[in-house]
Image 1 (tube, one colour):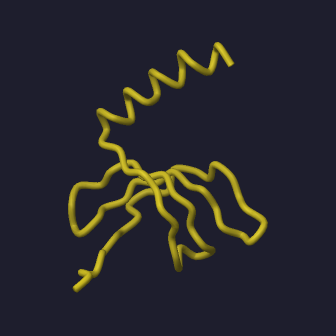
Image 2 (tube, rainbow, N blue to C red; image 1 turned 30 degrees about the vertical axis):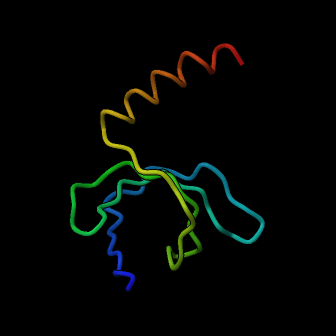
Length: 76
């Protein structure tokens, strides 16, 4: 039996892109099932009514990602 997943977007950090049907790929801080908020990248339907698959990152993981992107973006 599938359990219900509860979430709360504690801070909307920004929109990365928007699709033709209005869904937006966003970076937010999200608390999943009452846990400490994590950085979250995923697509959301308008008004956050539905969500697509995404990835969540701890603060440490987000810092490592920023370092990796900062280095690699200069080489693209």
